[in-house]
Length: 339
Image 1 (spheres, helix red, strand yellow):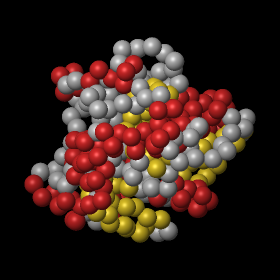
Image 2 (cartoon, rainbow, N blue to C red):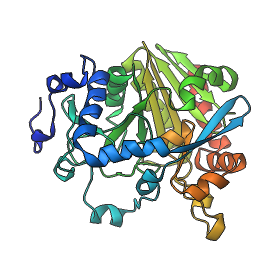
Image 3 (cartoon, helix red, strand yellow):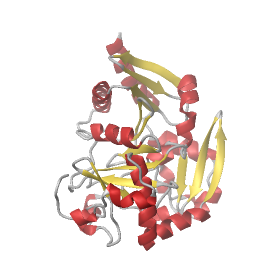
C-alpha cells in the first residue's frame, strides 16, 4: 500500500467486517457506508434527506426520464468552476481537507473510496486520486475499468469531464452509484437494439452509435480491457479531430461490468442548458452531468422540480449533448476504419 500524507484516513477492510464487509470491493464499500453513517453526522443527515426526496417520471417513446428534487445537491448544481473560484477554495477531495469524521478505503495504489455526503443514489461514493492532479480521463481510463470490474456487481461507475459536470475539475476522481438506480442501467439492451448503429466490431470490441434516445452516445462493449482502452482512445481522437480541439473533449462516461465491460460515452456540446443562464421565471437551476444523462435529472430547487416539462428535458439534452452533424462525423470515422 502506498504511504502518503493522511494515511490515518484509511480504514482497513478487516475493520469493516463488523459492518458486513466481505472480500469484494463492492461489499467493503457498502460496509464503509454503514460505518460512516454511524460516526459522521453530515453523511447521516445526507442519507436521511433522501427519505424526503421527491421524484417525477416522464415517459418518452419507450423509455423514461426521472426528475429528482434533491435540495442537498444545490452546492454541486450551482458550483462555480471557473479558474479563479477553483483556485480560491480548498479542495474538498484532498485528504488533508476532509472532515474529521470522514475515512475511506484505499483502492489500488493511488485512489481512495469515500462516501459522498450529498448523495443522489441510495449508495453513492466518490473515488479521488490521492494526489491533487487535474480531472482528466487520458491516462486514467484503465482505472475506471478496474473500478467497474471491482464494484460492478453492485454499482455503476461514472466520470464527469472537467468542463461538463465535475464539481472538482482540479482533482481527478470517479464516482459510483447503486446499479439499477438510473433508467439506462435497465433500458440499455432495448435502447441499443432500437437506436444503436454498429460503428466498429473488431479486435474483441464493439462500438455502437446511439441516436434517438434524446441524448446521443457511443457504447463500447468488450471483455478485453486492452481492446476497450484502444477503442476508447480512438474515439477520443475522432472527437478531437471533428471538434478541432486538442483539449479533452467534453464528455460524461458511465461504466459497468457484468462478465464484460460496457462503457457509455456521452460527448457534450456545452456544460449547461440555456435555461440555466436565463433571467427571472425562465431560469431553472439544472446542471446535467453523467447521472442526468443516465436518466435521473437532478433539481435542487423545488420550484424547478414542479414546473419542468418533458419538452424542457428534451431541449436540455439536445443543447448539451453533441449535435447530430458532429456525432455522425465521429461515427463515420469509425465506420470508414472498419471498412
